[in-house]
Length: 134
Image 1 (spheres, rainbow, N blue to C red):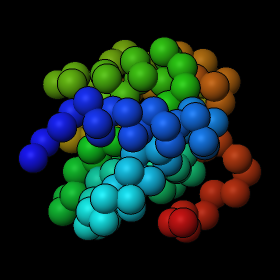
Image 2 (cartoon, rainbow, N blue to C red):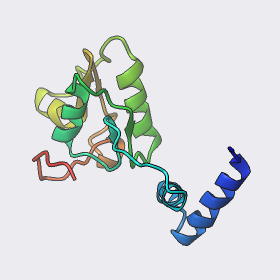
Image 3 (spheres, helix red, strand yellow):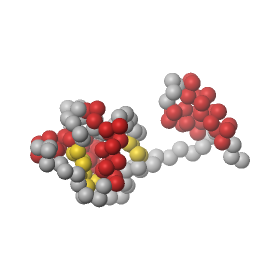
Image 4 (cartoon, one colour):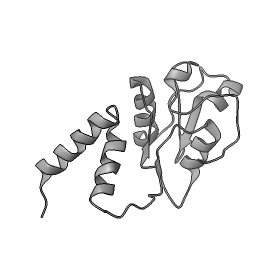
């Protein structure tokens, strides 16, 4: 049977063991209950480098479902606009060169971060521009 109270208690017990990482705690519950765990396309459990982020938006077979390590309201707002807006935002304030670093496009809707601060972008802005999945 399904016992949501027991599931929550198990997750909270594991949360205390792992320092509050809810995803780790829940995966421990799955392991303890011998549940099957399979990869899910479109779920990105780490912060993607910009080229990988752009590739995930262009993947016609698996649309993005989740990006992990979104830590600020501005990152969430950019993602919200990217996935809900039907048209591009006014991006003329961003130079063509900066657009490559600060903007992303999904289904024709181009959205840009509000600043050049890495904290405002939902992708990894490190100097390494290769796209290698973990």
